[in-house]
Length: 270
Image (cartoon, rainbow, N blue to C red; front, top):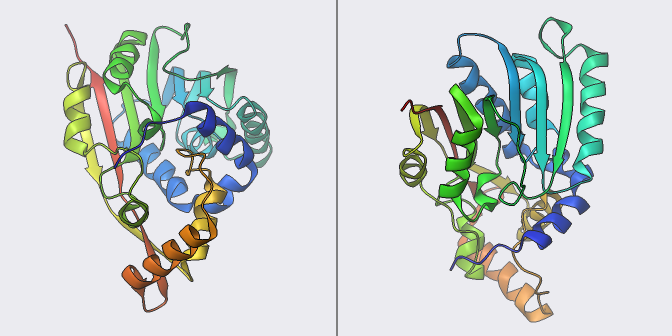
């Protein structure tokens, strides 16, 4: 059963895990790299005059983008205000270590704090809107796609990664609740009113942990458990651990499945 998203709780959980996120969110890091490479395959120039990143977080995707592209004006949005400092630190590190192409970072950096679905003002005439592992937290995707199309220029691109229907199915099957994940086909249909699909794909990645307890630690350290405030009782916790070990054991421990998807789209011409 899918559960309604508590945006305030999501903000708190991710704010508490900003420092640990990069070390534990291995799949999201791989997704950032894959999405940046997908964008690079589908553009004629490595220069974006105006770019908006939705859900910039700790800056992993920003680092990948800046290794592939030069950006004149980079707008980074995140629900977590504390993300601003992480992103600034990432920019400084990229500049010092020469991680960007031709040693160039960006000319202007702007941070837009808040829920992308509620922000009143967004930059216009964007060349790219990009988002890594964030869209699953949005509640009104049709409105989001419509708004992004409005703020993109006539040749603008929308590129995103998210998670599909089998994501963390082990947790959902035992706990009986989780996020509502859209299939790739559903997302292409929703966005298809405003965008033409250039490239899309999905994949499954199975992580192996030593124990169910290690799975829960991994989830806590990445902040992705931001859908429920209810604390587990001791008996609930013990029952979950026992069922997880019984149903999802493998030779080296237990499994946790991720189901990433990727889309690169071009704004429809009228």
